[in-house]
Length: 168
Image 1 (tube, rainbow, N blue to C red):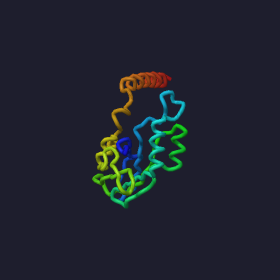
Image 2: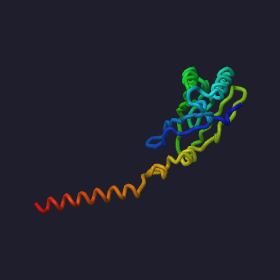
Image 3: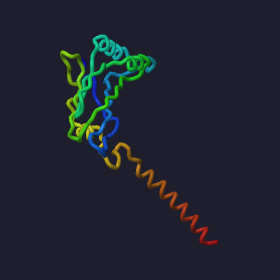
Image 4: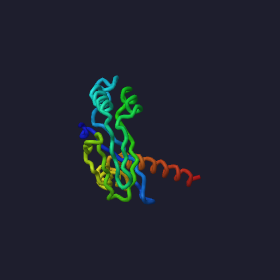
């Protein structure tokens, strides 16, 4: 089984305004979806998905809610990947808190295997994705020196305008 080729990301951090909360988890594949020349779908991912589809591979997932069992490769996902899109599957899961554990496996009714990092504690997934930064992530900051320079120039221009107005 190629379960290690799949991993999850949260679509957004849960707010827990009410409990239980429904979260969306995106299941992704590590294989690149386009060939190096970016003009056609990557044969490796198409071969993998074709094999998983033929074998009727299922996805088993749950957290604090009920267990879900669905086909891993749906006709819509297959069509999208054949057109060069990446494998992406949204999973809706019910959680009670940040300590909830997301368990996601792929396989069949006889044998299933965990995908990368699963079972995954929700709080750790939030931290790993850096979704726990109240005031934004470090990689999203602006260049402070450039901002300071622009602000100084604007302030100087504003002061000049105010001086001109005061002289009238």
